[in-house]
Image (spheres, rainbow, N blue to C red):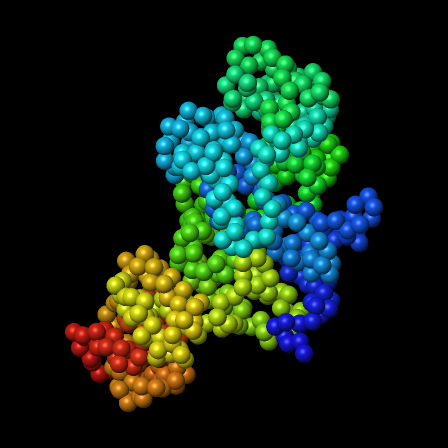
Length: 547
């Protein structure tokens, strides 16, 4: 018998037809493009091709992850919508690009400085591990994607150009040279127009990718004429002797590979438009795709690799979890997102809130739940169940009280007050978050933690809470403890304008934070004795006065 967590495939198929979740909305674009599925000349079903792009002049980053993840979500949604039509995903590396500048985060910078302008696959690896700089970064990309279990095929631009696999497409560009120039020239400044060419020959003298005007000599033979170091030369563009300008390359690739879906960031909106027009000139068609918003730092500024603002994927995984990152990236892709450490705790807790709901939801709601999509994307196999016994926010409050020198073992000793079978091996997801919470507290909480002294009415309320806790059993439930706190806050004797003021006082005087958890849960976790110590510290030196 099927349960809510694993509904019958037919139920999923039926519900997917009307789901408003954005991956299904995107997938419907492909269904509309290929009514009845994508088919070859014989009428046989062939895979719909999804593509993501990667520029290997730098290491993979959080933008790389989000594009592959989101594309995978659309891919899985399409398979669900069609009842299992075949798909492929290729991760395409633009490794024929000429190196424009030396990255800051590499050793042996002089090795790269001497090869500026050369294709990335023809530059020595400054890490001295691979045959070229691009091969090193491509290997990092594959390792990066494999780490998260993505199902993809790696494709190298250099391999395609050098092997001749793009030769027919390059001849096609030469045949349509004039039409492509007509598309591109109006988009350029006057100075750039004088030197622009859709095709970038690679100098046989220097090995550099040349930005020079050229004329087509023989499109069918792939021959062009241009000036190289003062000499007019006729050279083939085939077999790795040229590459295409970015927008032309994108349109050519869509056509040559038969790409059906590719998303991109808002900053590439114009490129997407003009590359689509070029693809049409070449006899192809712009793929379907989502144009997503970009990431912002905590000051609302666009994230830039050169500035180093924002957050890296390694940092997110140090302070949060892979699932929480996927959850954060899933939601509202057309809205700009702040990407800084402050968003991590909420993302972790919201992921688990949505995951806990999933088994009891009817299938229509499951398909709108981000976790349903994430658990079906590559690499998300879940943790230790559908619930987290302690929220990440509560865990951070506990670690904050324990201090910057707190240890994993110390945290687990307190978790024994709250979690049944409090063994790290029995709760691997929680144990991973303990490590994350210790790191987050060390880097972001402890340096700013400051407990204030209570006001006179707050001090009286704290003393009353201490008295109530002294008379309460150590095994009292979080709910009972919450009621004790609640009743004190409601008592007019302590002159709180609202319960919010009382809870804020608790957070600021006991935890050193403007926000905090349900106090009943915190007291149950930290223990009555521990909480009474916090109250004693808060009241130290404070004279209790009558109202």
